[in-house]
Length: 229
Ligand code: CDP
Image (cartoon, rainbow, N blue to C red; front, top):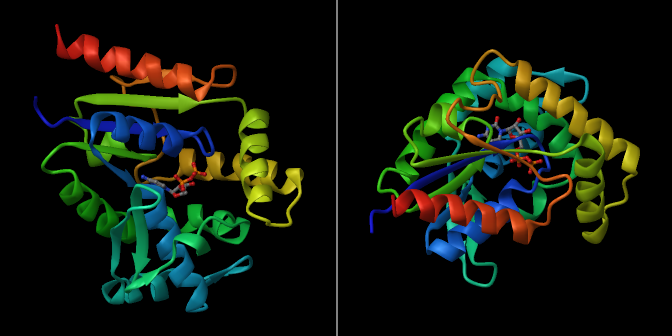
C-alpha cells in the first residue's frame, strides 16, 4: 500500500496530537508534532532573553535562527519522537504555560515559519507520516492524501488542557488556561503568514462531545473507505 500523508490541523488543545499519535500507531506511520518545533524555538528565544511577556526582539530571534537546530529523536518508551533543541532533549520543558503564552508570537514570524516548514516538508517527503499543527493541510502538505480539521468548544478545550497540566504538577488556574486557549486561537487565526484556517478539502470534526476512540474510528473509516474506492 502507498505510504500516505495525513494532515491534522485545528485549534489549540483539541486533542490533535492524541489522535495523530493513535492514528500513526494504527497505520505504523511516523507521527510528527509540528507544534513542538515552534515551542522549542520559543524556549530558545526565552533562554536568550529575546522574548518575555513585555518584550520581543524579533530581529534578534531572526538573527539567531541560523544557530538553531531542531530535530526529533524516537523515544521507544513513549513511541513518539522527542524534540531536541541544539542537541538537548527539551520535550519536558516546552508544554508549560510560559511557553504557551509566547509561542503564538514566535510562530507568527515568517522567518521562523520558513525554517520549520522546510524541515517539516522534508520529514514528510517519503509519505507514511501523520503530522499535526495549524498549517499542515494548507501550507506544509497542500497535497496531503487526507486532511482533518479539529475543533471543540473553548470550555471543553481549556478543561482538557487544565487537567493535563495539573496532572504534570503545574500550579495554574483554569482561568489562565482558558485565557491562553482563547488568545492563541485569536493570534494563530489572524496572523498574516499561514493563519490557522480549515483547508477546503479537510474533513472537520467537532469533538466536544465525542470520545477519542469514536473519533479515531471515524477517521480510520474515512481513510479505509477512500483507499478501497
Ligand atoms: O497542543 P496545542 O494544540 O495547544 O498547540 P501546539 O500544536 O503545541 O502548537 C503550539 C503553537 O505553535 C500554536 O498555538 C501555534 O502558534 C504554533 N503552531 C503553528 O503556528 N503552526 C503549526 N504547524 C503548529 C503550531
